[in-house]
Length: 228
Image (cartoon, rainbow, N blue to C red):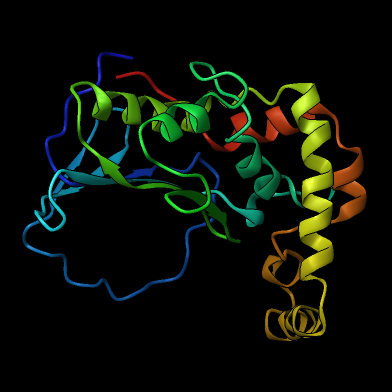
């Protein structure tokens, strides 16, 4: 990958292109685009959006969205998209271990408050918000983090084992009456489609037992990196 371009704007949103074979959503009416948003497309197919703002000054938000979620999972992969999102904070190529979180914390960016992510049936989105642009090179470092999340999540064996317990606890805390009713409603509402069989958190039997290579294979099948 060539050296990142320094973006002197306050908001950056990158949209990763899905791998071939993904079924597109049905036709939707497009929202009008803010005329102050700069939009472009890199040679590798990635679309970027940049918008400048001054309130607050010298602050930036960064997002990267992958059009990959629970719908890309096979039945024996149920829960891997969400699990992979968690692993993004447990080591990447350029930020091993808790390197991303430690680096961001040292620059006044807190995990869970300024740093977060979510997985849905359709996409996985990572965000780093309210970054203080107080020194040269910080934007390049944030772009490197987005780059690593796109293809270079390490998925180290020890981190996977530790994260299984985190996912189980998330499932336990979310397994309330409201969630159970939502799952049953989805089975009726989306009867006959994959939406009825994917609730993002996944099947705990699979979460407890999948092998590391299974997770990596899912990751590299659906989230592809092409150098520019």
